[in-house]
Image (cartoon, one colour):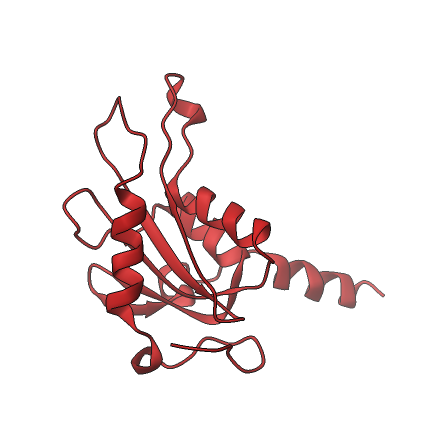
Length: 148
C-alpha cells in the first residue's frame, strides 16, 4: 500500500503489501529485549497517512512491567505524527504469525481506523472480528452525544 487511505478507513486486504509489512515486523522482532522469556515479538502496521511503523517487546525483571510490542507500536504511532492503524501484523521469534493477546487487541482497537485489518494465524481478519463488541472511544462518543 502506498499513500494514505480515504476517510480514515482500512483499505481492502488486496491493497496491502503484507510481505513488506511482515518484513518490518521481523526486523522489529530482531530488536526485542527478552532476556527472561526468550520470546521475541515484532509488530508492524500501516497508518492512515501511509506511514509504516513497528515495535518490539521489551521485558523487565519485574514481569508485570514488561512492554508488549503493541505498546511500542502505539507509542511510535503517536511519536511520529498520530493517525489511525489500518493494517497490522505480529510475528514470533520464528517468524510465525502471532495473535495479539486480549489486552493488546484492546490497545489496537483504541488506535484503529474502522475496519482495520490484522494478519492472524487463521488469515486476514478485521479488528471487529478479533475483538467483537469492543468498548472504546466510539462508545464514549456515542454515550456523550446521548447525554446531551
